[in-house]
Length: 86
Image (cartoon, rainbow, N blue to C red):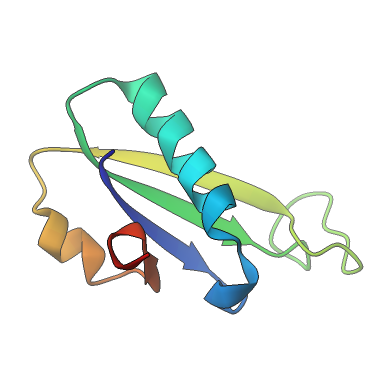
């Protein structure tokens, strides 16, 4: 599995590792074997999406795959939870 980095505006410990692994694997599978890292962004529903609902925990997910032209060490530096440490 590629390096996986998670960005969220929730405390990272509230997101289960199994959820992160599933999301990262979906992106990696969809983009193919040349993906070296995956970024998962999880944002709350407050005012961050068109149909934002403040009572909901999550508003949307953004999933990104990064090819080998970026150094995974640099990608890791911007995340707040990495599967490499799980």
